[in-house]
Length: 288
Image (cartoon, rainbow, N blue to C red; front, side, top):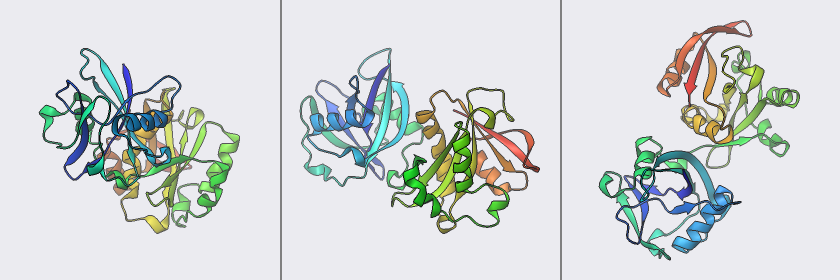
């Protein structure tokens, strides 16, 4: 397995790809991760070496990890750790360096000239509008003011604990992982907790499962599609920060048909029924 980092840049139906000397197919800018480097450090270095551009590490944001056929190597796989940047760059003025001979906008339909791992990225529907992606941030004490800014409807408090209550519980239970949700304007729009160990035990005997609970979007940010985005991005977040986890479990009220349809649309499957705080709920599962 060849572990790499890459930068994803796209506009409408095109993606920005590079071509190296003596190679026919185009691939994402980036390259291999050197020993001791973080993913962002490796990508920062590769972009300087290949494209002669300085992109601050703080502007690099993780999207997903895909595994596809390596190119041009045969009979091996490559792990692509994909990032996008919020840095504004005039790509028309970028001059490739070293072994890179071309930097070009390629239509996503021109599959015959696109490297296999990039095709895997395209086929897995990760090519959404990157500027609309949400950021998940594990809670730390420095973020408490952001937590206070999340306004939860009174009706919701009948069914879920507040972020503050979740944070208090996490201090006593290290298997609880409170997490904040930010939009691209760095506004804290919501909250959820991932619960390992005893938190997921009532729903599965799988020791590599995790429970998604206390999910809420602030009143001020509802109706903008954020709930669906969180559910869509959640598996990749879990895969990155909890690599041993292979299943996500959640519960949904049995009379909440709208939420049930959302989870089904995002590939969650019904696996049973239970009671959560004396309320009948459906148990749903996502296999990573």
